[in-house]
Image (tube, rainbow, N blue to C red; front, side, top):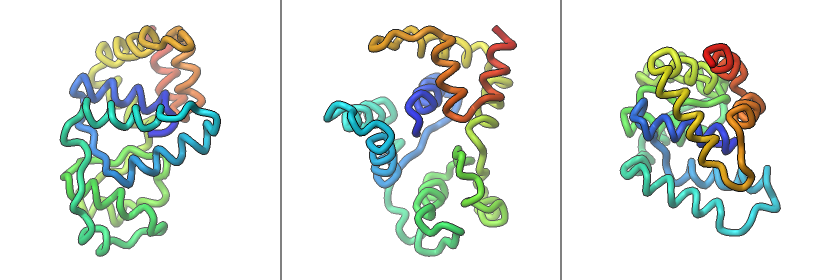
Length: 174
């Protein structure tokens, strides 16, 4: 959910019902902390507003009641157990994260959860629903107001956010 441009792209695709987003209060708190670390001068209240809008746009996306699942999980980084526990609790098919190595396939596949890098996930979405993905990217650029962004600005931001193969394929299709 960080960087924000990548989060925006993913949430726009979720709005188009390409997938069902899931998060927890702890995931949102980590997102909030990360955004504040990256943008220490961000105006007060913007992160909270973003979280409020996300929860309003996707009722039911924020899940809880997974403490027992979390306690039973063993991962290389124990601080990531809550992410996998939330996925298991919500019966999610996948966790989309750049932090692949902290979610070993031997553990996640036994729980029927795929761990997929955002670049691979977005390429998959582009292959399945190319027109919808491209239209969502155009809408993302059009919605930017402060500052105004072109589609190329959005693509450059996504490239910096760690999805360069997706961006290359979008540019090829345009």
